[in-house]
Image 1 (cartoon, protein in one colour):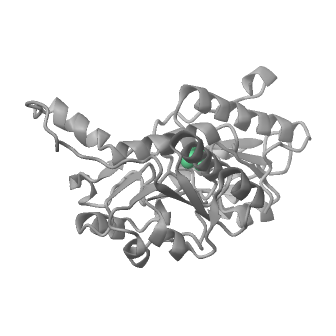
Image 2 (spheres, protein in one colour; image 1 turned 90 degrees about the vertical axis):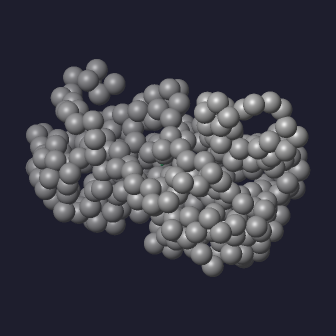
Length: 312
Ligand code: DGY
């Protein structure tokens, strides 16, 4: 889309996360940057980009190829007059599906059973072999009732007759009515009552380690934690310890606290399912995310308001 405009497009030659220096070098002289969630961009990176080819101004837009944008220091970037956009909506359905895949996988011990089968350990049917937990009619606690959180709640209610409770800064009466959902003003109440807890909040200073060891202790020993939002929202050492000591029954995480590194000891545990930040990784959705990011750049560089402008 960008090349079709006749614009010069520089694509990173590295199939890995760029260093700050590389990131600074790559943006120099360009009008727009299409960033990934691994590109940490702050005021000093923007300053390093300097003037663009067509004007005295630096880069005019950073189009983040993700709905989350905790990799951008929005305050410092906005202060420099650079627009920012993200890719909401197009990945909602895919992430909600992946969240449910994780809920089902941990409850039905899918990854463990797969490993067991491949290892040739199945020697015949047994009544108590790899017993899991039913999902239907249990209670799902949703932390953060945004687009993805509400779609997960929809699947829980419509697909599995689950009861839904949610915690959010705002109450949503229409949602409560439609899904019979119960609002929990206090996160602690949701944690102590739900059977499955799914996290859907952005990473902000206030949500870092939102789930820590004290809060894990509030969960039922039969409960499961699922995280498809951002890794640092869960204290991963506390999670490992809670899983190891039976404080909670299981967990499924798509996002890790220090990607691409996992807290030591986590992979030794059978009661966790781990995917590598691939909740939005379907061919259809990644294609759409690219198109949305490119469209945002086109709109901004042609002088129109990009559809997914991030207000600071
Ligand atoms: C996002 O968009 O924020 C996801 O984490 C990556 O797909």
